[in-house]
Image (cartoon, rainbow, N blue to C red; front, top):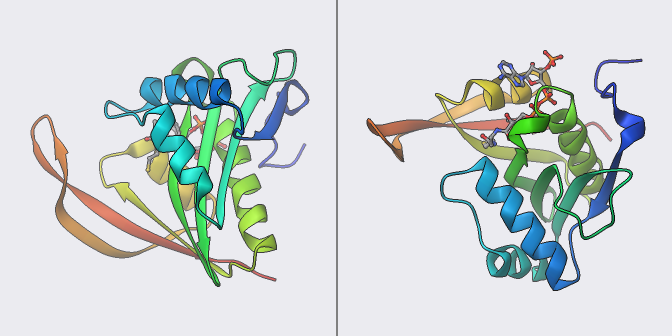
Length: 166
Ligand SMILES: CC(C)(COP(=O)(O)OP(=O)(O)OC[C@H]1O[C@@H](n2cnc3c(N)ncnc32)[C@H](O)[C@@H]1OP(=O)(O)O)[C@@H](O)C(=O)NCCC(=O)NCCS
């Protein structure tokens, strides 16, 4: 098995997010498990109405499409650029390759829509996400100091970029 394919790939299904209300609700529950300021179902739904948005979920293969997903990624493409808006994996399912799987799927969809360069922002202190992105080929192209509000003050955001090969 090559790096990039989770050991449990056979147990996981990647599905587009939506279009029914129940799937936005379940995705919002997941997002709140991943982020202290998780997004609402309405926010997720609104994002998905914008042209060029790629929103995918990872679910256990034996669950129904409306079951709470175990991973979520949203990317937005505009012309030949794409931005990763969010990515999260349920805390009970981390470090099994799901984050990488979601990122690879979102990148492939962005490429299919014409994206040639990917951008994202990540807190400098987010060890897991930084490792995931660096491992996936993203490089730091800039810093925004005092960008994130944290429990102990303000955190630095890293701007990362990856060129997609055609
Ligand atoms: C970041 C996140 C999506 C990673 O998801 P994941 O499914 O655990 O990641 P993967 O198992 O696919 O890991 C892929 C690679 O990322 C790195 N990585 C992931 N978690 C890591 C950790 N806790 N510490 C160090 N490296 C880590 C490793 O390089 C790993 O490759 P390896 O398993 O071959 O060593 C997950 O930790 C998460 O949801 N965090 C909370 C939300 C968040 O911060 N999102 C990013 C906002 S910018």
